[in-house]
Structures are given as C-alpha cells and as structure tokens.
Length: 102
Image (cartoon, rainbow, N blue to C red):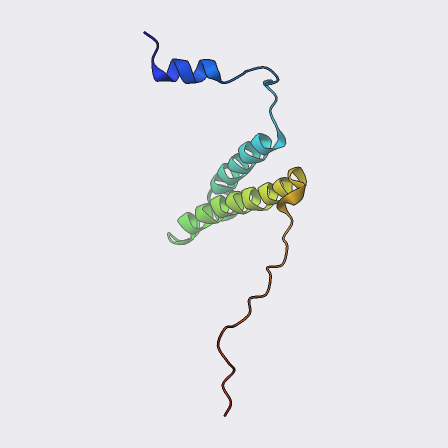
C-alpha cells in the first residue's frame, strides 16, 4: 500500500530537472564561510590580547560581516535572476475625507 508521500513523489515529474547548482548556493556557502573565518581571525589575530569584552564583540562582528555579505549578494542575485524583482512605485491612494480648513 503506497503512502501519500510515495504517491505525491510519483505525481511530480522529474524530467527537465538536473543537479545544477545555481549561484545562490555558492553565495550562501561563501557567506557562511566568510563569516566563520572572520569570527575566528578577528579575535585570534587582529584583537589578540584585548580585553574580555572586545574578543566576543569582534567575533560577533565577523559573523555580522558574513550575514551582511549574504544579504547584499542574495539581493543582487535575486534582482538579476528575476527580472520582475525591480521595485515599482505604489499607486497613490486618494483620501476619502475632506481637507481640514482652519
């Protein structure tokens, strides 16, 4: 007796799917790697021998740099891959109440 997972998997066509890895995966892996390397290098090399609050703060700055890189590059790639991802202005909304005079 097939389970619903097997039936759903059989209903999804697999033709045309490849094992292609897009640039988004490289961006994610590269950003995580960059954040981890900076989180290790900043406290151990750049701020070696600093006071106690500086060491974890510099590690957090390394992780923040990786997250910033992830946000910036994924935003650029999303806008490039999806042509419709450009920002369009919102339509103006008319007010239904009269202007106050005074």
